[in-house]
Image (cartoon, rainbow, N blue to C red; front, side):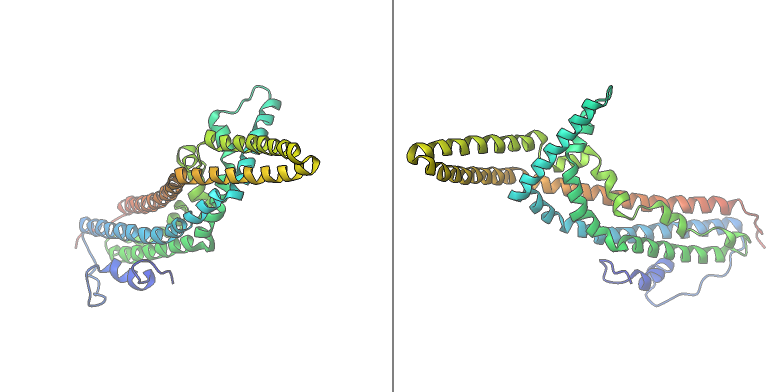
Amino acid sequence: MIWFGTGLTIAVIGPLLLRHPGQAGGMVPPPPPLVCPAEAMARYDAGGARMRRFAATMFQDSATQRFGVARLRVPGFSDWAYDWVQSYLTSYRILAQALRGAGEAAVTPGRLPTVDEFAHRLAGPIRENFDEQVTRPAMDGGGLAADLAHIAAMLEEEHRMLLAELAATIPGATALPPLAPEIIAAVPHDADTLFHPVIDTETVFLRSVRPLASRLGVLAVRVSEAGSIVTTAGVFGYALAGTPGVVAGVAGGIGLSWGLDWIINRVDAAINRDAFEANAMAAITTAEAGFLASGNAAVDAVLAARRAALGALPRAGCV
């Protein structure tokens, strides 16, 4: 069973709420078969509206649970990004991406990358870890896919019973194709289709990366500070104690360089980390909104198509 935030299962309460909202006393016998085509279509429209409301509620419950898991993992992603050692590694990976892009541009005549393409390449290490730490753990196991299949199956059953009620007036109603396969096919329900369009859009995801100039500036400071401090400390050690002093001086210079670098990293985190996490959350919210919009749109589209097909069928008329 799939559990949602309401604390009850779709499989248990869904059919009851969908068929007879507000009825607390159990299942109510269905009304007698309709015989007037106009009334039959009105009944179909009422059933379709009820199905749309139900689908919207269930899609929202599913999204709250599944995307909530992704939100809970954002602080861990932020810890990774602002870890002192990892920050070094990420800086060098970004620099490697930049050098690789420049090399490819140099050997490809007539083709220079745009600024957006270049920025997209540089943000690759951050996107990859966001995918690894946030999106896939939230989507793995097929939870969202199972939710979608459950919702589609319940809508299918409701639609089947609705058409059965109309069969006396519209004999071909029960032969209409099923809804569930079309709904499932139209709604994205895995990490690749939900998140990759979001994290590959620079206006959404690159805001979650510290400003490019700042990031590479930190790298430049690291390299220059390490070289100058270590060299100066080595020379100073030699002046004080000769050759043995060089070792002590270099060791002290490395320690001082690392200490200053740690301070740079902490200042960077204090200034940028809240915005970093907020924009990672924004990427999740965008993906969640896409799931909800596609789910509701799929239900609207399939019900509209079935209504059009139903309206084109021969009718028995009033008796």
